[in-house]
Length: 491
Image (cartoon, helix red, strand yellow):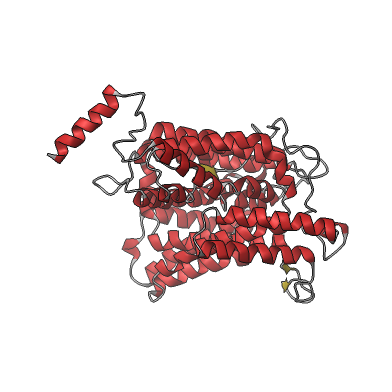
């Protein structure tokens, strides 16, 4: 009887009312108002990316140039506009094509790889860095089309995927602490805390305020906790800048703003600057780094992108009871394809790889069940394009608490690793430790993969190593020995 009822409702929604119920609202027990509200909640929960992505990508590349064509400083409005348009378009497509309440935007961690690691390599430009992302996007799209994406997912052990996420969380946390100026180079030590071991400046006080406000909002389950922390800290920073007038670290004042004072130049509403769009080069990375380095970098980005997406997709589906009879999210293949194309679009848009955001669960928790929620979120991202200049108001000290909070959220997965089994615990530990300590995500992943194969063989568990992992093991061994190999070959 229930099967017949469902069949009738499905037919009714797809034939009798194709226009009125395109998103199958009644079938999933929701309404237009609930979907719009859920989409708004998701946007509020993840709108911080419009601030964080420009800040993370605001540095100079190895040639001294800024992303978006800035000459005397980063072109933050252009990066924000590019971030918004790619996120808006891909989230809209996800809603319409996959009919799933999932939003996409520039992935945290992925943008850090580009801004902190890739473009800092000798000779690498921002266009080259985005070229790596385009290559990754092409490869991961082909993996979806050929069905190999699932094969790679199964090849890497679950504990190692978890360790990568945890290590990435610590890496992001370290970046946030350094951006805030709470962790600095020490005199006689590698790092030191604050200014002479103290919170001895107004900018540091702003960071501490934002950090604990964000933590309290997370504790209380307040929707949009990260955004609330950023906005509140920015307001505090503006007030502090007017009243106390701190200088800037760049200007020689150790107690000043670490990334520039909070100030708005011109109108908060401007015609969008899309100078990041199309700013990528696929050929440049091969010319400057070589094939092996490009493959390793693209693979590193792909791993982070790939596994985060799988986890996010399942989390959203579980929260909204959107799993099919096999326990897979509705329209899994469409979602994976769109996510892969989002990575490609992010690179071509010059704003780093775009991926699924776990903050989508906030909208689902508020009632969203269909793609109409994603259409709402996407439309809000597109509307925000015209307010991109507002990001210049946000100092590093106000944005850094969100980075630390994201690091904490990613760190929570550490309990999923079986630390008692040393063949598991040692590779996981090395992965987690080497990412922040070497200040290289690629190194962390590579050491973890190499350690996993070695420890598996030593423990008599070589059979558990997938053939794809053996291939990756060889690639990373060559990567770590690249310098002596080159010297040996060159005589």
